[in-house]
Structure formats: structure tokens, C-alpha cells
Length: 195
Image 1 (cartoon, one colour):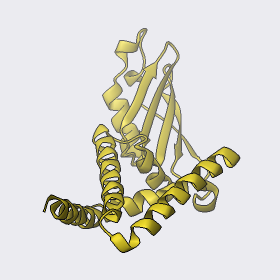
Image 2: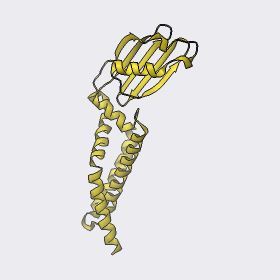
Image 3: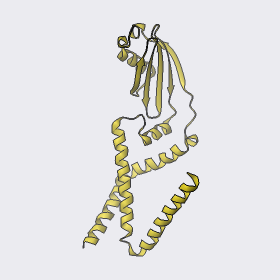
Image 4: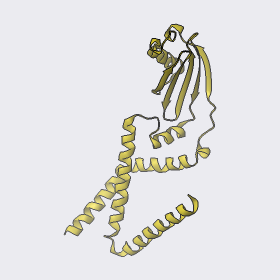
């Protein structure tokens, strides 16, 4: 009775977790390939560099507290349609540096404090770069890292429930366990030879 209940629940969990996490599983499998072979998928987009000027009153002054960071950031956002969050805003006596980062995107601005003149460099290599950064939760909001963790847990549960199910399939148990052992040994050999 208990054995049958475990088999039923394991099968139920495996089927419905697989369906629920299918898109996530497929996403991380595909981006595993695109991460491993970026030269196959990511176009070589050259960084775009622009030069202009902000209101010098926003960046003038003797100290870093006199910089109007909000005005500078909003100017750059509006001028270059930047949607990525500010990763850093630093300033010294002569220059301000503003960095925006998001999945598959970066923009760096270097502003002369005396004149307000600046250069901004934007790198946006395309959608595959975005997907690769999402896979690694790089330059994303903290909540996305939680989603990646949940996806990984779902993949673990799908794998474990699939493994448990083999013990309830008498005709396929021996072959299934043999394939499991063979696959594990092969992976260790490949790791030893090529990693």
C-alpha cells in the first residue's frame, strides 16, 4: 500500500513538475549551449560611443557631494534611452563616471566636471547576450536570482522523481539503473579527460 502510494505520488510529481517547469528547463538547457559557444550565437556588435555635454552646474564643485547625480542620470537616460539600472556613480575632483548595467547591456559615461563634456559608450550585443546574462543572473535584480534558484530546485525535483520512478518499473529497472551507472561513469571519465 505504502509502496503503491509512493509510486503514485512520485509519478504525479514528476509529470506535473516537468510540465510546470518545462519552459524554465528548456530555457536553461538552450542557454547552457549559447553560453558554452558564444561565438556561434552572439553577433560582434561594436560598442557605440557618443559625445555631448551636461549642464556644467550639475557636476561642478569642490567636492563629490555637489554633483547632482539625479539630473545627470536622468539626462543620460533620456538622451540615450537607457533603461538599465545605475550600477555605479563615482566622482573625483576632475571626473564623474556613471555605469548602467542590465542583462546583455552596459553603458558607461565619463563626464568632465569642469566643462560638463562627456563620452558615453553603449554595448548591447543582442537577445542571446540577454538570455545568457539571465541564465547567470548577471546584472539582474535580486528577485531574478531567486527565480533561477527556484528553477534549479524544480530541475532537481524532476530529476530525483524520475530516478525514483525507475524503482517501480520492474521490467525497466535493471536497464534503467545500468544506464544511470554508465552515464555517471562516462561523465566522470569525460571530466577526467577533458576538464
